[in-house]
Every structure is written in C-alpha cells, then in structure tokens.
Image 1 (cartoon, helix red, strand yellow):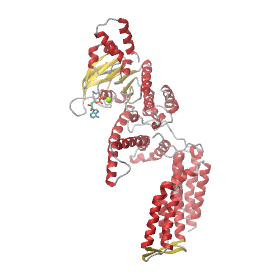
Image 2 (cartoon, chains in turn yellow, green):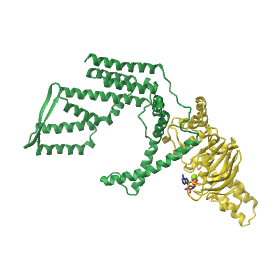
Image 3 (cartoon, chains in turn cyan, orange):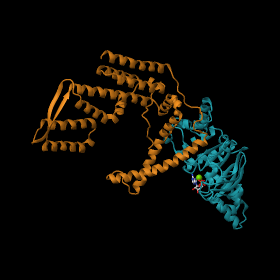
Length: 266
Length: 322
Ligand SMILES: Nc1ncnc2c1ncn2[C@@H]1O[C@H](COP(=O)(O)OP(=O)(O)O)[C@@H](O)[C@H]1O
Ligand SMILES: [Mg+2]
C-alpha cells in the first residue's frame, strides 16, 4: 500500500513541479498515472522510490514512512522500470543485469543463479543469458529490466512509460507481463500515454501541471464524460462512439453495451 | 552496428581458457619482466619459440597474433630504423654515399607520389611501404644523376642490425603475451581478475570494486555510444555537415558538431543510469555478493611457479654470460 499525503516538490526552480498531491494505492491494485509531458509523473515515481526527496508532505509505503533512513527498506519493496531501455541496463550481459539488484541485496550466489533462471524464463529471455545489450531489441532489454525487478521480489512495480520506446509487438508483450504480475498479486503503477495500457488498469490517476485532477476507478473515469474531457486520454474509437451515442440520447442498450465492452478489451 | 565486439575474445576451450584470469594477468607481468631481463638474442628467441608452442597447444591461430601486432607496426618500424642507424658496434656491412641532387630528390618525390596513389590497390600495405623506402634509398645511393648539392652517408653495422632484431623480438613477445590474455579471457573476467588483484590497494583507499564497476560500465556502454555517434553523424550530415572532406577548420566544426550532442546525451544517460542503479538498491561502497567468482586451480599455481622461476633464471643467465 502506498500513501502519498500533501506532497509538493520543486527542482529548485519556480513553480512547484508537484503541488499538494495526495492519494492512496491499495495492495494488489493496478493504477495508471496519466498526464501531459512535464506534468510531473516521473517526478512522482522518483519520489516514491526515494530518488528525490519531497519538499513537503509524506510518502508511506507498506507502513514505512519514507525518509533518509528508511529509503533502502522502501526500495526493497518498490521496483521501477524506466522509459529508456538502454539507460537502465547495468550489466555487461543479460545474466549480469538480472543479477545486479540481487547482488546489491546480498543474496547468496545459489539464490541469484536460481532466480536468474526462473525470471529469465518468465520473461522469455532464457536463451539470451550471455547476450550483450547491443545484441538485443528494445523490447528484449525492457524484459530483462523487468526480470531484474521481479528477481528482487518487490511487492510494488512502477513502469515509467516503459513501453513508450517500443514497437507495437514489444508493447503488447510488456502489457501481457503486467497482466501476469497483477494476477500474481503485485501492486502495479503504470505511467502511460497509451489508452490500451490505461484500460487494463483498475484505477486512473490524472495529473495536470503537478496537480491531481482525478483519481477514480478506470471504468468510472471512462464512463464519465466530464472527467474524460479534462484528462488527455487518446480515446479508442469505440469509446468515442459510445459517448457520442449516449450524448445523442440514442437508447439502444445492446449497442451501447457492445461498444463499452469493445472499449475495455485490450 | 550490431556486430561490434569489445575486446578480442574468441571462444575456445583449451587450457588457456580454463585458467583463472588472475593467474593469466600475473603470468603476463612475470613473463614481461623476464623478457626485459634477457639480453641475449638466442635466449630471447628460445622464449619466443616457447610462446609459439604455447600458442599451438592453446589452439590460438597465429593469424590472430599477427593481427594483434598490426597496431604497433609503426612503432616497430621506427624502433628498427632508430636501432639500425644509431648503433655503431660490430662490422660495417653497408657503407654507401647518398647523393642529394635536384634530380634524385625529384625522382624520390615521384616514387612517394606513386606509392600514395597506388597503395590503396595493393593488398600487402606494409611490404609495399618497405619497398617504397628501399626504392628511395636506392635512388639516392645508386643513381647519382645531376649535381649533388649535399651528400650523406648511410652506414649500417652488424651491431645495429642485431640490436634492431633483438628489440623487435622483444616487442613482438610482449604484444603476443598480451594478445594471448585478451584473446582467451572475456572482458568481464578480465575486469573481475583485475579487481581481485587490485584489492590490496584498499589500504591506500583505492576501491578496486569501484574501478572494476567503472570499467565494466564503460565496456557495456562503448557499443551504445558508438551507435549513437553514428546516428548523430547521420543527423548532422542531413543538415549539411560533411564528415569526409574539408580543411582543418571544417574538421574542427565537424568534430564539435559530433562532440557537443554526444556530451549532452552522455550526461543525460549517466544521470538515468545512476537513478536506475540506485533504484535497484545499489549503494556505492556497500558490500555486495558477486554472481561471478574466480576459481584458482592447480594449473594456475603451476603456471605462476613456472613463470616466476623464469625471472631468476634470466638474471642468472645474464650474470653468467656477463
Ligand atoms: N532533473 C530535473 N531538473 C530540473 N527540472 C526537471 C528535472 N526533471 C524534470 N524537470 C521538470 O519537471 C517537470 C516535470 O517533469 P517530469 O516529472 O519528468 O514530467 P513527466 O514525467 O510527467 O513528463 C517538467 O517541467 C520538467 O521540465
Ligand atoms: Mg516522464
């Protein structure tokens, strides 16, 4: 569970990048954070893993209040996959990269090798263990990054636009993993511009210029025309049509339901 | 750019591959010392033949060693020339007058031009270069056409030739030794070996682990950065920067147009990488387990003993032979 209370932040420049943001994410939920470029999404993610320090307010992860002493404890609970596949590949080979986090956590070598095998298999990279990053596609590198996070066994995983630099196939693969992880009971936070990704989540948080605009169930946000208009979601054609029909007062329950179902499919 | 290989490692399974990188690095250093202690041409040739046998047993193709020598060919050439010209011991084997006249110099320039134009079509570049040098010398020595306005003397002694040969063999041995190391050891193992060997430096507050981490991140990012440099060059080329031609001034502009974006991108990269490392629980200076460990075997001990013994033997030989 993550609780963010009245958090403000600036990069030593006016105005604040985040302004009095508060929300709670329950365990096992999948939450999408939406917002224009520069609205403070990445900053929020970095605050949660303690890479940045809030100017005001507090962040609590699983009952631990984040501060300089607890930051290492918190990082054991929260893993983050960043946007650029190249800039988070630390190891010389796939195997080394998956091991990196576990090495830092002082796992035994037996445990590390066991987990490398397990999680490389889970992300379908078991045949690439000795490959170097420049021999891999962007999607494969992201999968390695995910395996590295899974291997540390964090309860919460943040994806900061982790699919934005991938081709559609790579993107769908990562989306499939997110669903798998959700089934395994992980708490997932995805920062995204992608409607497909947002539709899969349970809740939507919408940021605008550092302020929290909306935080509600995904279905509710999608059904409510007012909040939808305020957020910058690129809507699926079926959802657009659904709202058009609703607005026009056409009462055809069957068609409306059909369009709604279509919109929620991935 | 998917085929960049860092280091020269070629996969294999001979004893050279099974050895611990630490013993390989140590053996390399010990044998280098021996090479410098030896002063006798016969002894150093013996050492070279022993190396050749090791190469054969270790299954390393000799061609790879020759390739490894390529970068130092200029160095070899200058050392050779220097030795031949300046050591004046032993018998004289060549004593010729060089005639510098308008015509001989013109001819020599002609030869150089001809060499410059045709060299790109010739496969054996080094031999061709040597042929050019010999050609120029023969013009000055054997075709004294025109009135010479200056004369020089080319004197070569047996001592000069011997000295030059000796130094060449010594350089070849050293390069061969390091090539064996890099051919049979993965860069990661090399880094790890280096790290372990540098551990004692922690007494003077030098962190071997951090040095190793820096090296391995550098190794990991070289292909990425090369790829990026390529992209930037293409992008700049599409904006009219010509990377092939140009005077010195244009060259400076070209280099700046490459370096500035490279620097900016690299800073952004390192910032993001640092974030990613920290988020994955990396704390500089903290203890961490290592996935890869090195295993010291009997063959490593034997190797170190044998290579260590060569040093006193070499000293003894040197003292005995005066
Ligand atoms: N390291 C930094 N230094 C200064 N300003 C920054 C830095 N990182 C981000 N910003 C600024 O903070 C704002 C929010 O950035 P960010 O959190 O990255 O937005 P998002 O991820 O939603 O696109 C932007 O205006 C951006 O320019
Ligand atoms: Mg961002």
